[in-house]
Amino acid sequence: MLHSTALTSAFPDGSSAITATSELTERTSEAARFTLGGRVRAVWAAREILANLVRKELKVKYTASALGAVWSLLNPVVYLAVFSFVVRVLRSDVPDFPVFLLSGLLAWNLFSTATSQGARAVIDNASLVKKVAFPREILPLSSAGVALVDFVLQSIVLVLFVVISGHGLAIQFVWLYPLAVAALAVFTVAVTFWVSALNVRYRDVQHLVGIALVVWFWLTPIVYPPALVQSTLADSAIAGVRLFDLYLVNPMAAIVSGFHRAIYADVSVGGTAVLPAGSLAWAGLVTAVALIGSGVLLLLSWRTFHRLSGDFAEEL
Image (cartoon, rainbow, N blue to C red; front, side, top):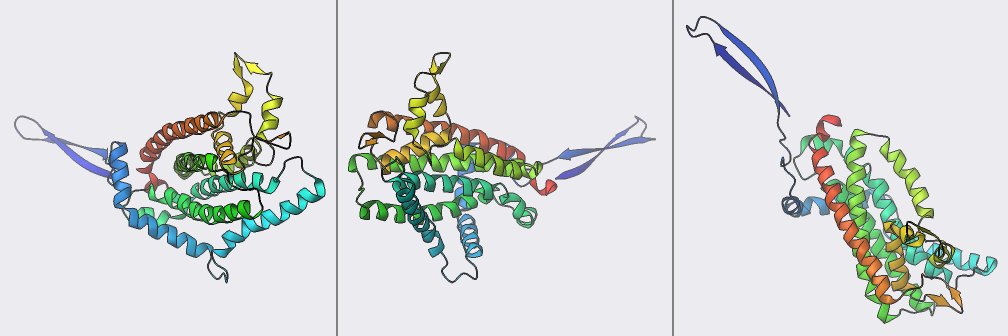
């Protein structure tokens, strides 16, 4: 917000004066300095606003819908039915392909939905930003919250299918699931903060996000087995670094691999390699590194969001 300040200077005898006006920029809606603890406390204090926004988005999503949230449950059911049929017709080389596909696809859906909707989170709530003082982080967080609700509902369907289909859950791998969920949540919020803030200033960002997500999807082992990527890149390296290790620098590739190992579990089935060769400890380490890297990215993107948020009202 701009404030005008008048500065007056006079001659010693007081006969005349020169008046100058300077404009000072004051950040009135947010703290001038970013501190992680301060922002966490601010968001926590506004948690009721966040919950109300998530509820509002869910109501809008299912307004005039007879089935409501059941549609979120039907999506994975339809995927399972379709791909079970396709696998029988095309004879996929991946055993229990529907389980493999959905264990990665549900994670991707959370990320892509939160990112694409989060890119417009601030713009779509322009009137709220201009009139009400609240932590602006609430807006992209609400988009992530709506996607998280769908993810939880769809995960229930996936777990039930895994048990009923006979694939089963390997107890020794299940501990990877919460670690992968944590990495996914942190990375999703980090990217959502970044794109939502940049899109206020550069409206092309929302269109670039859509294109980037299409490319990113195919760079992530969701519809093809990561073991195939590992075997293809096994003998390739750049400056002594294996290309497969560089492939896992893609956080979503590492995170989806964690979901695969937790749910699909088997590295190979009937002699067919599906998941990357490596011990359970290696899979946990890859997922943990993705979580740590996502945490660093979240800190950087949150700082960027806070720096730009002071200008949201003027740019909307």
